[in-house]
Image (cartoon, rainbow, N blue to C red; front, side, top):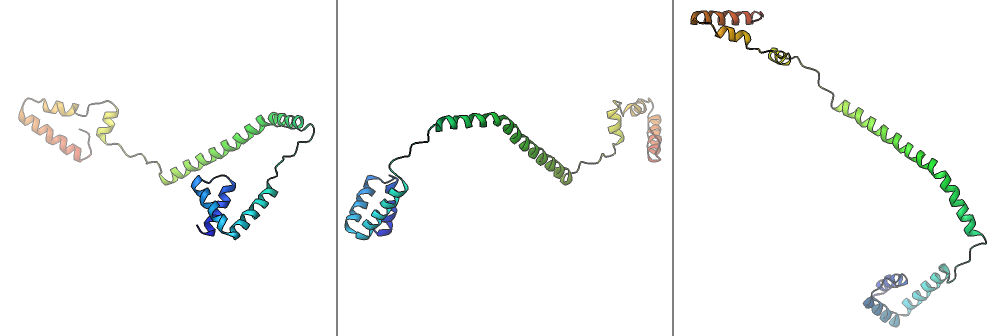
Amino acid sequence: MDCKKTERFLLRSYDTKLGPEEKTQLQGHLERCPSCRRKDLEYRTILGLLRPDSTPEPLPYFRERLLARIKEKEKEMPALFGLKWAHRAVAFCLAVFLLFGVGILLFPPEEPRELSQAERLFLQNENPLTETASLLNQKRAEDKNMMLIFASVEDRNGGRR
């Protein structure tokens, strides 16, 4: 094992994240390498200064003062809670409004188109073939043909059948 890998193992060993095999490799290297033993001693000294063994006692009446402050904050919370949601609701409404506006600009609504005569008759619930049926019900073939000719001439001139 090289010294760089040993240093990584040293740092992980302080957090107790080494497996049994890695611990034996680390111990073996530390026994052979004096510079890594020195680094181990330095790291342990620094950790000893950063992590004291004893924790200081809290000041008198700390618990009572802390609980009183928590109760005060809880009384203020409903107002802050509503205010926070109000800001979010306003932001959400603005975002929806902007998206709706962009959607209208990018995809404008279609302009209404002119309905054909058959569509108008269908919407008015009328049968467009009533006049044609009376023409076709003629008994004589000549009358039928003449009526159809006159109907087509009227249709070209813009007259109604």
